[in-house]
Length: 203
Image 1 (cartoon, rainbow, N blue to C red):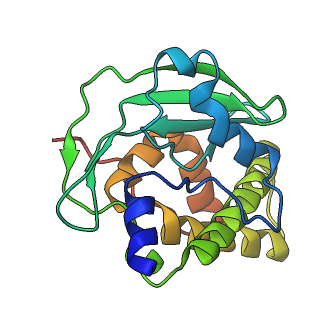
Image 2 (spheres, rainbow, N blue to C red; image 1 turned 180 degrees about the vertical axis):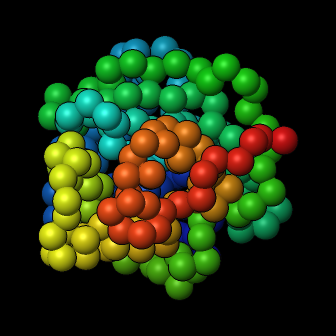
């Protein structure tokens, strides 16, 4: 059963944006899950391209995501390609604000889709962790908007966000997450003392 779930997750047939049935998805979660099917993304992004985890944008209430192609492989893990499209979304409205293909062509990457921390998770646990990441991402957006000195409680919230993000974010795409909003990641580095690495130049 776990092998079947792993294969479905790897191929994007089960969405990482879907929340456990016992807990309704947040507005941000719904916005990311539906972005591909709404204009202007519906005319640009194929439904089989999974969406990334959202990253707070500089504008209040806005988030950025990218979409990347996957291709089936002989192993449990599919072939992962660099992002082929990007979008900005309004969490409150639940709709994409802008959406378009990336300037450069998508290239195959060497790393597996999911980090090692997801290896022992069943679908329910994966979705529960995903929901927590969405909640923490929204909390980070609120803190990032304020750009103020953080309390001890807020700093713990930042650490929780980073731990959840690192446990779920696709290793091959960390540079692409950084590119979505470098200012956010550097703000985290200042606020929490660490962040993800700066974007590497794509070979």
